[in-house]
Image 1 (cartoon, rainbow, N blue to C red):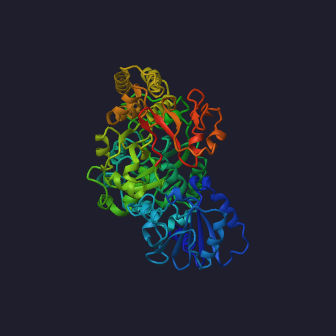
Image 2: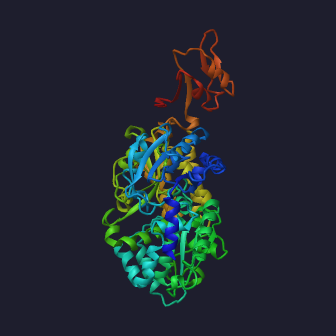
Image 3: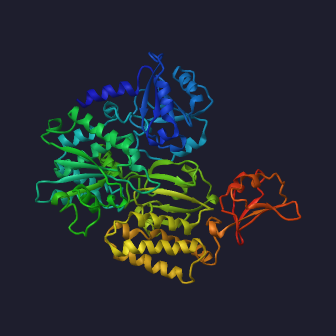
Length: 624
């Protein structure tokens, strides 16, 4: 059955005609891929020339809309930043006459007709050097199929060795053998805490309760993080296969995929993947004739950030209010409906099939001793090449930021690691693994990595993150409910120039108290952005006490000036919405009236000669 599916998938992945693959994940659709795809599929003259396929995200979100034109000789032509003008270039490429204009890269299959992931492609031409730099340091394991297969085509997943790991495990491995394999591989949870995945499975497998439950956590709530969404939208069957393997390991007969309601495309794709796999007989009753049976159900989250915390999630799944409860007992022993319940992030589960096929030693070929394997990160913020990347754990921040992200060292001020409850640390070169990141005071989290440029105010950013965490608090713990609001007020007083001299010690004391007393991970880590940024950027906080913003970013603390030699083009005068730009009495020179200025930046953005200067006392905005 699987072999028949695989052969069918190979015929669509590597057909005898050209194949035009359009990235139709959320990032592609937002960038305009839907229009490109609609125009191409509406053509009536494709017979014998090309097939049109909708694929997921290749990872290079900054290049969307992105198309991959595969010709029948196994050559792939990548066209980025598509618009209607480029459609003719795709058609010509499909006809075997690829125009060089708008062409970003050319790759060929290392073995023609064999395509089981991006590792089977070799770049032979790079018109856009950044495209090559983005992929070169990466090691694509979990995300190898993303952007190459149609996520709604089960056969294409099977053609890339999909469900082969499940087949091997069901007929060649006992559940305890599978658990030992995962333990020996050293797989750690990719959703935040980094707990040993195999140990979770082992605890549940030893329970005397015959009813055991698995949950795949896809409730991704971190701003700037979209690893789970990318996998769910681009390669849902890899998550399903990992989930089924984990269920087999603990002999669970019921599994759930907990997903964000705000990810409608991912929900739709995953539900179809489940339906297709059941219809194909891959799982369900007596899957593949192994005697093992399993049901999988999708549960959409209530939308709150705290619902991603495992005990809060369990409450929601039982139709209760989404708030955490004390541990122990841990869910692995006493979870959903009082049964042993193992909860793993979707990326964690997607690693399991790879481990089954390649072994524990193969998994450890990349990464560090304590943090083996690869990790998906999302690059966001002040970076040229945004997207999701998969790299070996232990890779240097310099490689990620400067090589993959394409941003020079002098332009980077700080890194925000681990989401809104992670840390804000000064930019420096260090290894990106669980232990090293923890030493900086931050945490790995689910893999959000926001690059912060020189003009970002650390105080205002910390205030913004605390505001988010305060709004997402379930309110159960008084210290979290009231303390985060008070923290935000103290940070706000800094950004508007009304802070008391001893405010920093008050912020530190309150932040530590919230972390020590709060019940769940949200409250325990909510003050991390403040405490870590105070450690690395204390002088910036102290400047705010004096009414100055070194980043020249906080509106109440900045002023706009028109400097000489102003050309008197009056562009600033025309666009000013508040009448703050006026002519000095008796002189032919424009000035900005500070009392009328609303700090909208319109004059600065409009001036064609860069003669508008933004200051905060001795600090001047650097527009380079």
